[in-house]
Length: 273
Image (cartoon, rainbow, N blue to C red; front, top):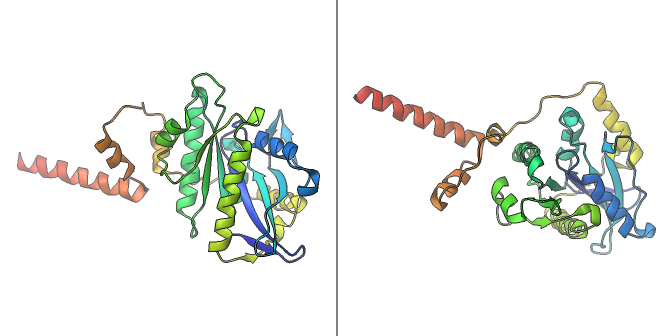
């Protein structure tokens, strides 16, 4: 939830850019850094990269609009998208006030997009507080890329979730994604209890020290959503009634209950024969 930094006398809202590897999370922050004057932002900080891929996180802090005369800053943090770095990603996503999920909409990377989003959905369902979400349909310049509405359907998103088309490498959609996330963050701050800023988020160096503690005892127990089990399944067209029924299966518990009812019906039929 949003927090208050007493040392700088300002409110803090964290926007975490999540998504699969090479989807464009770091590119979003670089374009934001290019567009915002240095007087209204920090320097972008990346502790380590390997062949252009983020190993820990990217950090950028920008000034937001004052709220009731009080200064407001947004911490923009990307997470590593590689599966083997999930133990670094998960704690940062769990501490997000808003998530900007960057999709790689190109055909070859849709399975990675679906898998990462399924894990984000599982994390969100286990939070006590709602997690505001903005989805960016990136790489719209790639031939055959899924449109925002196609991604909305494939990710089973509610109509209230913004899905923004983007070509982040050229800056397209980057500002729109950020401004939508900022609006969600301001609403979250107004509707949530403000807590003292955790020491880990005081600045980029403090966050890096915190993330390094994950290396001592990495938590590799990834939260998995039931939908992830069906990512590789062939996509088929269904009528509206069937699609609505499928969307109602919104949790692992619901899926399990349906399975138990199906088993019970099969047993009843076998007994009656």
